Length: 320
Image (tube, rainbow, N blue to C red; front, side, top):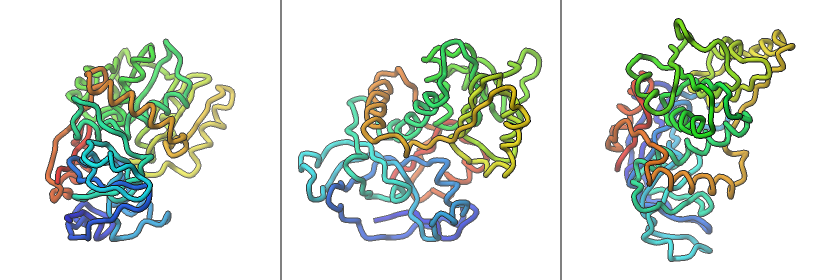
């Protein structure tokens, strides 16, 4: 089968298309013929070598979520799964391929009316957005800032915050045009990447959901209102300064809270229940999925180049 691996850490050009043996599903796993493969921010972080200290090595097969048809099952898996259209989480490896394996507990059948590209746009992102807002204890009427809102996590967060009754939803965007598209999804205020919104901008936020991280995270901590909650769900912009926590100490009397959030800490059945509900909402148009574009699997270099350039609104989907 064709697959895309990180040949050399660094730029997108370090990705390589290679031939690999089709994997065999282990007990409790299924084999999926992929029809859609999500390209996520974590893929870029791994590709750059940022997570090498955590065991990621060159030669790594990228990809964490796919949609397709189950073609084989491992032991202890009902053969009735064969032939079903599914979404699957493959971990942090194995998705950029024509065939992928996944543990059955990380597989969900897709409802009628939901295409594979839409499924890999909301499947992982929607769960992160849901539980991040829950972690932030968002209450109706409160103000929210979504930093890095143009990606699939940000887009889901905007919609879920609006559904939860947020009083105002600000977003950071790289251009007015992108801001207009985010307004169409529920954003009420658009800021530039540095957090400036011009006259009439919101002065402070009760909740910040941050996908970006990076060196400018401390200045966004300063935008929190008293009792404000900041939840970091990604570091696509790199790690924040080591001493960023000093901002919390300097604002001690504001009783601010900072948290990181990974969906890995949510019990599997809870993730699956939320994901299934979101798939149904997406199939009925209640939750919108934004596919930036679909590209052939062997154009993964171009997909990552566009993502690194900040040109993507929503998610790029690779198609074998």
